[in-house]
Length: 258
Figure 1 (cartoon, rainbow, N blue to C red):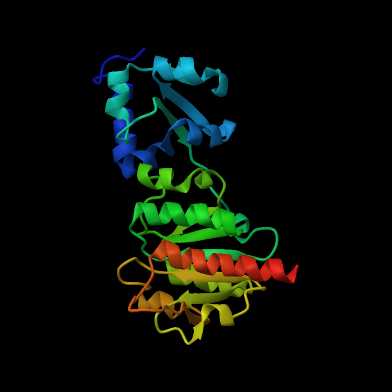
Figure 2 (cartoon, helix red, strand yellow):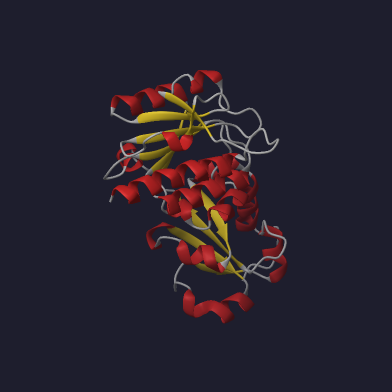
């Protein structure tokens, strides 16, 4: 059992929790809590760190390998949550291919431009899975999906939802269009309301930064600008909410067609 915060493994875990560079170099990320641990694909689990109390309570739900016991004090030190459950996993990353982003059927893709809020990104991942999105494309300056706060917000969708980060978003959008994907920009200056368009074919939505929306050079890559009509004096919607409205409209139209 690890009982000292000076232990080298503990120091490495703290770096993985706090530093994206450390996560990138190691090719791993961390998750906390039994619910998230249950979701981890077996072939991607690197290590489980837990307290003895947690092990005795939940051992029937845990794999019999990769377990390292730590004292409650050490676990509190490595945890990123205010009320830790007593289990933390180190998970190996998965590389998704462009083919997986497009899916086996009609592409339904989200393209995210410079999103900065971990909770927003995690919520978008979770909602994307529920709405049948085939994959996500993120600009390189989006918040790190492997940020522990983002991971928690995905509620396990991060293990299943195909995604890639790209250095040049306009180039990536151009590649989408070459494959027959119609690209819609969610924009306050959109000509048509979102529900006046058809999303039965290959579809991608461009979603912008929480404060500034889409960068002009990204918005200009779209085939069509659309807007979400709003009552009252609201000027815009939260990025995750706007994305959810659009994703489920695609889902609705495609279910209706079936």
